[in-house]
Structure formats: C-alpha cells, structure tokens
Length: 113
Length: 124
Image 1: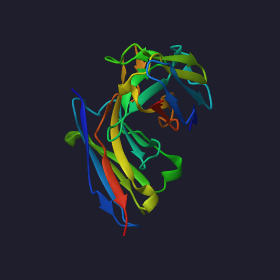
Image 2 (image 1 turned 30 degrees about the vertical axis):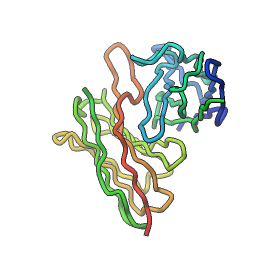
Image 3 (image 1 turned 90 degrees about the vertical axis):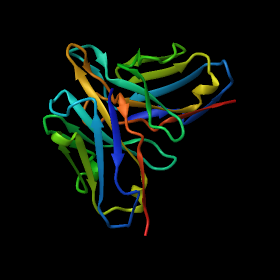
Image 4 (image 1 turned 60 degrees about the vertical axis):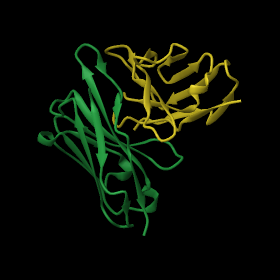
C-alpha cells in the first residue's frame, strides 16, 4: 500500500497567521488518464469523525471556507490555512485514494499560539 | 442524504471475536462505483484504514490484519459487517465506516460521508 508521510506532527500558529501542513506519498498519486491527484485532506475535531475538506488535491468540499486550500502534485502536497481562526483548531490528515486501501498520513495537530 | 451508523459491542475480552455492523442509507452498495470502508483510530492516535468493500463484492483488507479480518456485505439490509478475531488490547479504538463513490465523468472521490464511530475497548 501507498505510505503517506505528514509533517510537522504539530504546529502552533497565532490567530490570523498562516498554517502550512505537508504531505508526501511513497509513490505518485497522479492518475494519468484523468490528470488528477487522488489526494484528500480531512479535519478532525475531538469526539467527531473526520470531515472532508479537500479532494483531488485542491478542490474544496462544499462549505469549506476559502482560507483553506490545497496544492501539490505527484508525491508532494500542501494544505494551507491562510488566516488561522479559532474554529480551525483540529487535527488534519492527508489521505491517498489512488489505489489499494485508502491510506492516511499520521496527522498534524494545529493549535493557537 | 447519505448516513452511516456503526453498531456492535463496546467491550470485548482478549482473544474474542469482534463483529461490527455498518448500517447505511441514501445509497445502494450494488455497483462497482460505490465502496464502504472501515477505518479505526486508537485513542489519541492516527486514522488507520482496515478494509474496503466494493459494491460488486470485491474487497481489500489491510495486509497486517488480513489473517484476522473479514468483511462482508448484505445488500438487501444495506449493511457491511466487519469481523476481527483474536482481539488484543492494541485493537482498542474507535471504529468508523465511511462511503465513497465514483461519478460518471468525474472519477473517484474519497470518503465523503462517515458514521459517528463506535469505541471498542479490549480488556479482560
């Protein structure tokens, strides 16, 4: 199965500042036939299931604020929160859905500095 | 509207077999374009994919757990059942089921709907 590696494990950012999370896959998850990267980002708050934020590496799910964005291609991806708000405190996971089981990164905990 | 709900025991003893049921609504698991997956999360730890059931009956299982894990579906009942035998305290986790689909002309989506999860504790 494809291994997903996230960094950092945690980060503390001041309100209104930028938060950046990185995710690397052990092989390319760019599907040649449709030129889409099969990479998703989820947000998880305590006691709740994960919530889908981004799919195909950069497409926001309906209702996700535009301060949250995804980028990258091939094996290297980034989730950016451009101006951190209190409600963004959570753990964020990347996930590949290119093949086999849909494997997750180890998670990044985002806190307020 | 798609909904999923996990049910089963919340406490099992070591060496026992865990059987969890995912009951869903809002879709049918009868084509290759729909999957239901199981994911677990030990307390304070990351998400781990366990298994994936395809609508046509095909399936994928986590290699480290393959010998202990069975996944089946009952299309008429809108259920997917996960069985994990020889339970160990290390299997203590919240177990989630989730839905994904492929839309014509769009390709596959990731898990877009999740159940609330069920916390299973393994302890004597």
